[in-house]
Image (cartoon, rainbow, N blue to C red; front, side):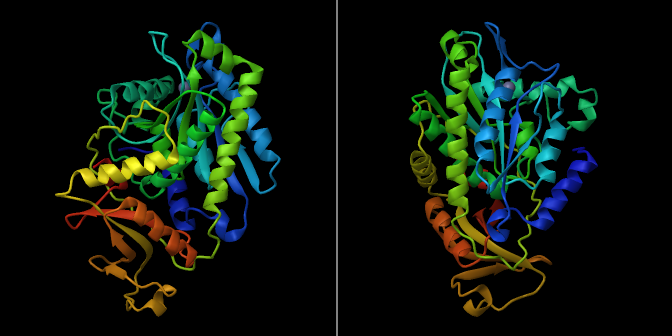
Amino acid sequence: MKVNTGIKQAFLLFIITTSFSFAQTGAKFRVVLDPGHGGKDFGSIYNGFVEKNIALNVALKVGRILDADPSVEVIYTRKTDVFVNMEDRALTANRASADVFVSLHCNSETKKTAFGTETYFVGNTKNVASIDMAKRENAVLMLEKDYKTDYADYDLQNPGVISGAFALQESVQAKSIELAGKIQEGFLEIKRKSRGVKQGPFWLLNKVAMPGVLIEMGFLSSNDEGLYVNSDAGQDELAQSIAKSILAYKKESASTTAADNTVAIKENVKPKPEPKVVQENAAPVKAEQIKQEVKAADKTEKATAATFKVQIAASSKDLDLKPGNFKGLTDVTKDNSQAIIKYFYGATDDYNKARQLLADAKAKGYESAFIVAYRDGKKITLQEALNK
Ligand SMILES: [Zn+2]
């Protein structure tokens, strides 16, 4: 896998500085708005509706709403009709150490019957429609002259899988799902059809080192929906809804504010790039439903249930597991099989309980804690655990 060293450095910087920094420092909550396509890359075009223009219009409207909140800082990957390559979009987000990355797009399909909204987080999938969608959004890579070397990790023959994927996303995937759920909930409130929260192999979402989602705001191939997303009123409504959902997510992630004085090291694990079946959901999806489904999915295969733990710290120091060493937390375990010793809080096969444990750990001051998963004593990705 060849990745531009600039990107690697940006990731490294991110790993060292730590992830969810705004809650700890009182710094602004940084939102990267990424209007899809631009310049020579038009995205989808149907009935005179042009994806790149709609994406930019809505992004600027979302940005204007968020700018009114002094605790939010908005960063754009583009503010005009210019071509921006995928790598630069990721770099913009990673250099800003953004709190969330939101990519805006419009959908299309040849039958011209589909309509509704979808919000994606990054994941490998066998779902044909999701792969096709990701393929279309990834296709811009081929407009870049060095795509064969710069994007060697994206296999055009096997587009459902990004090799070596999701290492960086692992600890933020749950947050991406949370944000995606809020965005889809918001669309329901403005009476848009929700096609659900989905996962797909998006090159760009895999390269941003923070919770990230890609929103398909509607189908340009549907004449009615195309008219709506292309209209000023429709774009205003979409922007209001998306901004509101981002702020709701921000509010939730800021609810724990205690400082974290331990170093949480994000591991660059190599998950098996094994494709997984997406949990498709044609019906409207609410965040609660998603959690229930995740829970139900966990329960279905009892033989090899995953165990979730909350990684609270990693250190070269081998600490005694007494509560006094861990801000009063009991039920702390450690993995000292490697030079860097990892410390975990709790253990459960219930993802919802793990989320509660995570909230508890954060409330105690472990702000950069995150959930990890194990199966049969082996570390697996959160995605693998949740797909079970
Ligand atoms: Zn697009």
